[in-house]
Amino acid sequence: MLKVGSCLFTAEGPPVVRQLARMGYGIFLDLKFHDIPSTVTGAVTAATKLPGVRLLTLHTLGGTEVVEAAVRAGRAAKKAPALLGVTVLTSHDASSLRRVGIAGPPAAETLRLARIAKASGCDGVVVSPQEVRAVRRAFGPKFLIVVPGIRPANSESDDQSRVATPSAAIRSGADYLVIGRPITGAQDPRKAAIQIDGEISAVLASVGV
Image: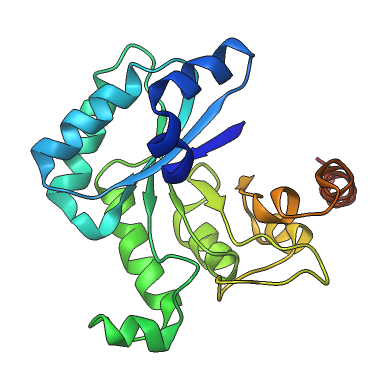
């Protein structure tokens, strides 16, 4: 899959999703909807009409009513994408959470928000690499876990506080890895992608996948 996030979608809009779908790619539409229930319903309905969308995100901080409205809208589509609840952004640490009024460590808040996502009907969640193992234990093998903040060994973490290597995230139980800047920001993106693919292939082989 290719991720279409807010930067690309704001610049190019729905036509870029249609173009990528025509090229044969599945789309991870990572727009992280966060608004009142009626607005999120409309956004999810519009997103499900785009071709090739396999994964779609919204913020679980919107609360149960918002997430349930999104789930209903998604399930009403002919080809419903998997709906993922975004929990705690990888840029947050305990200190930054306290500054916005959320007490406790990121791990505890991630699990709390993941429970909202699960109870409201989401197909899975987006969590940092550091919370994958706990979420997998709590919600079992069929709950999708999508993991950003992936940084190969010896790469910079930039503005993301909670990161891990591809192999560590896979061994913890991730279903999908979101890998952007380690490739797009590399001097040789093709070489970087091949190296990361090699690391992923090696760990999958080691665990018998």
